[in-house]
Amino acid sequence: MARAGHVSTFTCPNGHASTASDYCDTCGVPIPAGATASVPAAAGEAVTAGSAPDPQPCPNCGSPHDAAALFCEACGYDFTTGTMPRPPDPSPSPDAVAVATGGEEPAPLAPAIAVDWVAEVWVDPDWYEGQESEDPCPSPGLPAVVELAARSVLIGRPSTSRNIHPEIDCTGDPGVSRRQAQLTTDGQRWWVEDLQSSNGTYVGPASGPLPTDPVPPGQRRELSEDDRIYVGGWTRIVVRRATPEERGA
Image (cartoon, rainbow, N blue to C red; front, side, top):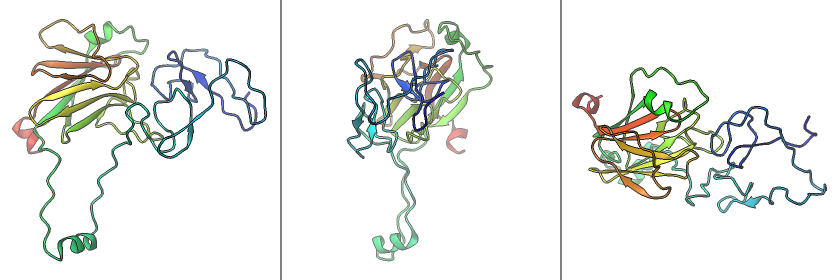
C-alpha cells in the first residue's frame, strides 16, 4: 500500500511513468497486467542511484514534470513541438464588437476554411489482424464522418488533464496515442505528420497491400486521392471531398 502523501506509479513498455494502471498517461499504450506500482521518495528521504531523474520545470508555466513526459500536466504545453494547445475561439461580446467597429454592423467572420473536406473514421478488420492487439476488435459498422473545417487537424485520444481535444477522436482505440498525428492542408492538398506516436502512423493506397513502414515522425507525407491512414489497433482514416449533402449539413 502506498505511504501517505505518495502517489503510486506504473512503468509502461515505453518507459513512461503513469499514475493510471490500465493505459499509460503519456503515450496511451496498455500497462502490462501484473505491473508493480512504485512509490517515489518523499522530501527528505534518500534517493538511491538509478532512480528517476529530478523533475524538470515546464518552460511555459514552471510546473515540475517528469523528464519523460510529453506534455505539461498543469498547462498542456507540448514538450515535443514547443507549442501550447490551440485555445477555443470565444465569441466576442456585443459591447466589444461595438467598440471595435465604432457601432457599425460587423462583417460576418469567415470560417478557417469552407467545409469542403471530411474524414471517414472506420474500424478496419484487416488492419487489426496484423497488429497483434490484445484488445477485441469492435464491429466495423458504418464509418464516422468528421468535418474538416480547419487547416490543422489533430488525430488522437482526448485528455482533459493535458487539454488535448483531437478533432478526429479515436477514443475507442487504445492503440492510438493522445497526440497521434496532425493533418494539415493548403485548401487543395492534405499532409499527415506523425507526432512521435507509440505505434506509428501508416499510409497506403486503397488498391494496394496494407502498409508496413510507418511515416517517419516529424516528416509530412502528402496524401494521394486514394490514400488511407492507419493508426492504432484497428483505425483507418480516409480524407476525401465532402458530398453536396455533407456541405449543406
